Image (cartoon, rainbow over all chains, first blue to last red; front, side):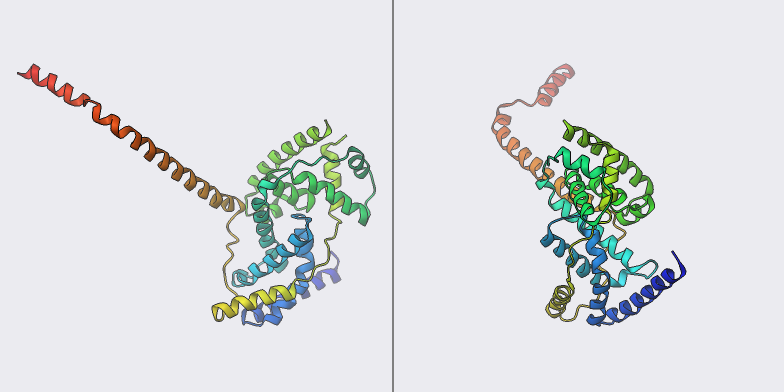
Length: 192
Length: 107
């Protein structure tokens, strides 16, 4: 990151700290400003947990309501957005657990899969790729789905994924190994 | 052909995807205000236990399943006990028979 980028990040963190302090004193307008600043990033993060726009909106609300009633627990050691993402991970995971009975087998058309996997990235193709990957991940149990989502779809490192899920690094690696095997079996199965 | 490397590539492409724009500010603030009004002044708290890992979230749900299983087992055992009560009356006590034989030996 260049110097101006780093300065912007620092300014944003200081701004967050001010708003959090005011929100803790009961200033709801300050909390509204925090929501405005972070809802887009949390929205992008939660879009990997559901592609139903109504549910997506509900999950974002749930994150910010839960964050408000937990705000005293934010010690300011890390970035506020990262703390929100940890809450979002739990909210998203709870949603998957509730939906576990509705897991369904999806047949992905061979042509769209192959075509997508060999295209260059554009905004439209990112959406289509997201739809395909989501349809595949949806067929896995929540824990496998979570680890693959964090590592491959969100692009987090093992350490970051461990922190977001509250697991140890070893646990992430073991879970990822199992989930990869299940996904490979799934890919072979879909092929037949 | 669907391969793991295709999956990795698609997942990487999907990272560039943006979610639909949503503004939840008014709804969240209204919800919080509703909670504050109902409880007579709830301030931001310390409710979320972020040290609880996803595994512990699972464990809580597993515990419910375990309790449910235990309840079913107790109910099944009670039914078995009720069915076996009449039979028990006609059974002779094996210990009494053994003691009787022992007494005969002693005499």
